[in-house]
Image (cartoon, rainbow, N blue to C red; front, side):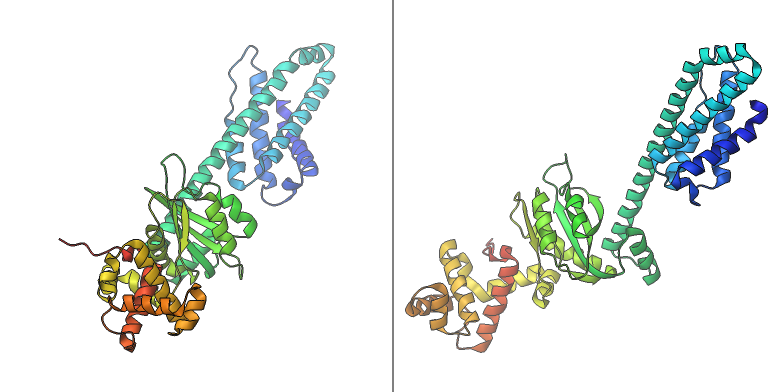
Length: 389
């Protein structure tokens, strides 16, 4: 059989290509297939030619498994090659033994168990090597994707060509609808949004992640015109801690700014509380984010002693003020909104006025109040009274 090795390998290859559709494509060339089969058959013949030998050289199936994994060949199809090839090999052995006489046939049958044991050893070696290569490939892919996400959120200094390449590797469009999530880890035992990818996949949302100490960062690519509501519902279903979401943005090179939005949104939530918050993309939000301390001082100056009132009284006055502004200063409309009497609205607005920097008949005071209410509505932490030494 050793003298007919090339002929046997060609016959095996023809059987594989005829029976398995994957091998009729150009992914695994005929030469590549013949080379892998030839090395395996050569090792098997050498092993069988040494009576009493127990050591099995599995370098051939191990190399094949690794190579097929990196070629993207499905493992079931690769294992089917081995089953077909061993069946073909057994048929050739039996034919050769029959040509050699009855004694050879009996000897072959006596060693059949050993031959099929080799088939199992080879298949196991190939499977182990294939899986190790897939795990290695996935790890390398995860590392590369994580590095690309790091480059996006840290602010790439490279040009648009590199950003296009990043988008291609991540499977993202360069321009589309994107959202950045920052998710706080409740424990170190599991990621903060475990299972989210499985929920996002049916929504057509693609994701790329970067794990950080204490939190994870995700960049999500949304399908066109889908909106964020179902995405945020999926995030809420998986959240074990605080999660901040950025407004939707359209270009990957704006990811750094979006990350700031998601971080501020996360940090504005109550500690140790599983919740999701998305900030609106408004000029005021951006101004406040750029300098939260300056905004805090401005709110303190506008609202003054109001921040030192008991929480219940303060909340009532602020709620009335928001309704009054939405009603364009109409006590009657405000009363209808709040289900109270007009005189109650006037009394509350008078109490509020005592803590402002002037009367509400002054447009500048009204403008300051409106900005302060928008700021504390977006960032509730600004309601904390100023610290006194």
